[in-house]
Length: 202
Image 1 (cartoon, rainbow, N blue to C red):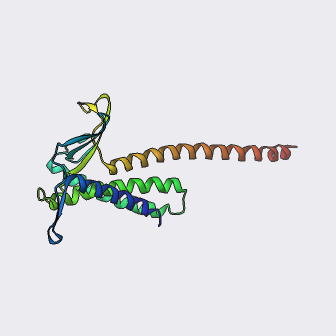
Image 2 (cartoon, rainbow, N blue to C red):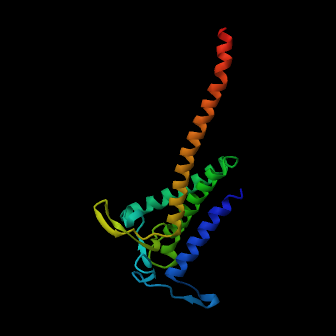
Image 3 (cartoon, helix red, strand yellow):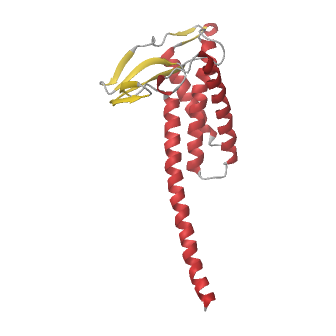
């Protein structure tokens, strides 16, 4: 399925960007890249767009599910990613926009799943499934509250989050457009059938 290259591209973009932000080392190749320290930030477009390195404990908007729930969150993410993969295979002959949307969501899900599953081990701070998600895209936004927390900037996110959001929005728009298209087709079919029924009455 060629559409999986979309998912692969999302995962690669997401993971490469996270490694550049967090830093990494490959001792046997004598590669040591420091990256940013947690909380470090620099401006890209004034105060509107900044790169700010934080580590998300697991859920959207920086919500901490707690140590015991993190395992279940990681397992759920793993199962959801597997489900998306099989669903993508199931719809392999469907409309491209639908497959593209699911591929974006799958790529984003896998990108963050890698953080949750392996980053704790890679960076030596947590066991398997208990890693933290690396976030760094920081945009200005109007002040709002969510789950009792007040934000004056949009919660910091990453490319995996962006892929999931774009995929979901595209899916919603596609679904609505597809619904209207099907309604129009059914209306045309009814109009075509109407003369035939009228003639039968005579």
